[in-house]
Image (cartoon, rainbow, N blue to C red):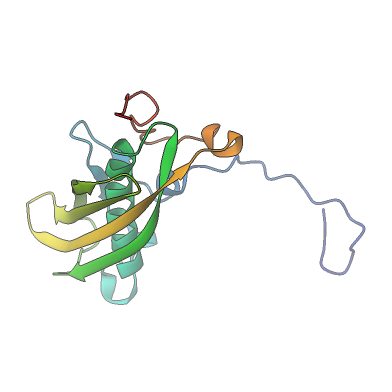
Length: 159
């Protein structure tokens, strides 16, 4: 095992393969294409409320996933701009549902709006984002998102 004072030591391999970022956070996808998570201690900041960065991650992810479906063939999306408005806290034990709608799908960008609600329907946050379409390389093509690889690679687009 490598130690800070022994630079010649061979590092111990990570016994757990890297999981998808959202999967590591306990996020799953439901039948309606929403992202779903039950808030636990790992999602919280002080006062027992969901961390704003986690809520922003839900919005960015759900909007980006939907934007990826509007991407031209053999392209993926990256976030160019993200706005989040927090409405009320998410509390430990609540289940949150994140959903999105594409408002514009152009030749080079997509614009989406999204929201995070509790399972009971209370609005937690709303957001909007702009995504850039980026052409796949061999490296990116080989690593689809495990929660939802999107439909971009199977949809024919107009020339």
